[in-house]
Image (cartoon, rainbow, N blue to C red; front, side, top):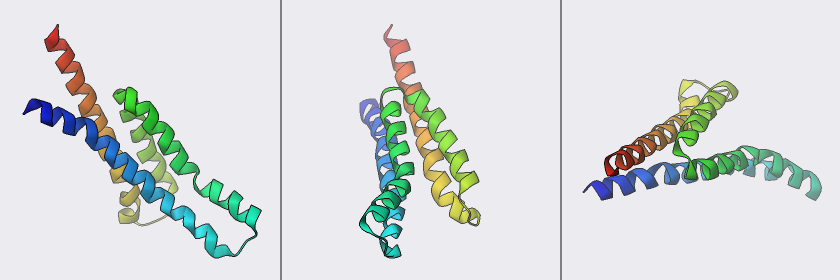
Length: 120
């Protein structure tokens, strides 16, 4: 049972983060409604995908070092809370997945640390 829980705790923050990256990246599709030229559309798409690329980089680091991932995703939550101009529920759509991911990465790190402490 403990191995299933540990496996779920390992997979959950990574899956949530990948789904959140996909969600954030959907907003880049707005650039196609602006009827710009090819190069302007490409530049706009690249700019709109920057948060997704940064979240991918954060996930890559967090995949190996969970405690760093927890810190980075708390910082992402603060960033989204400051940058999103929406009512509280609109901000929560962006902040909650970051906080949940951070909490799960922290839990995974603690579980691995406790497991290695009991092994020695």
